[in-house]
Image (cartoon, rainbow, N blue to C red; front, side, top):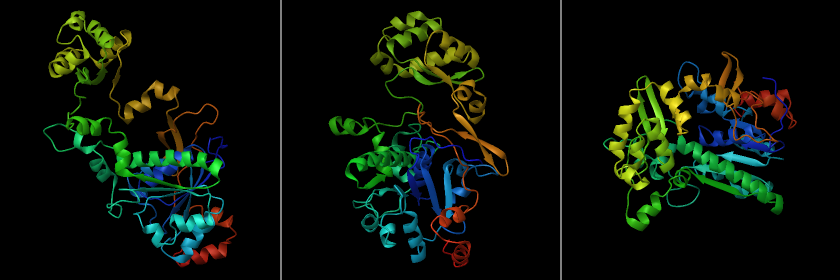
Length: 398
């Protein structure tokens, strides 16, 4: 892939990414999309396990999460590999890692050691439980953070065990907060001249988006329960059956509900005491959903969509990748991007966001296809010649 001109907001920012799997690499993806020069360090050999994650014959998740990165290899468990990292950190702005707490310190690469050499370095650390506290040394994955943070308890049907969302939301939330912290730390460094540690715990990242779950219990002893596809007390807002599929309608506001009733040909429902107010609709949520479902099931998705647009009712189709690729709005917004792939020709994936008017985020470089793909370029810039690199490769250092 020919690298495009980097006009991103983070152009000139150098990031060293040590993380594996999801949280660390997704944080690096976000920073890279915004223009940062991200150098991903993988262990020699198999590299990041993300290279083999995903569905189907071609494991394409890697193509998304490793885009906009240059790839090098280094064995951080040995002194020579650790010294290579220190050389990479010369002039670096951000270091990302998501190892088990204590691992970097064991390698002599903890914040105290690194800040003694690189006082301006911002160190983003992602872990299951954070860098401190009685659980900090426990192993933790995204699903564990989702459970402890409160997410799993409220996802799914009430008569079934807790469900998974379907994507690794705990990891990506921790990565997003890690990225946010890195940007805040960059701003703070402009005034102080000093770097700092960004500590992003998986369970706390999930906790941040749990709305009023904690205060509801703390103040009133209320424990939110699993409620399936509805938000209890907010009605109507659900996925309803159509004659040829499913359709999402959000008609819970008073004026919006009145428009929905008109679209249904039943304007009198808006004045019915059972449905006339927000509280009343919440109290009669199940029967209201049943009433709407009996109407929607007689319509096609196209017919429902035309009515919802005409009556200005928030609604939408339930998309999979098939619908996303065919939708003109996705195309007009350039929400999807095509990135070259050595076997498939190109891969269509989600484009960077949010959209900045003056400094647009872009995909400038495809994911490294092999472990250590850019060793010669990156390490060569540090003064290491081909003979030195060959020697280190033979000894398992890179």
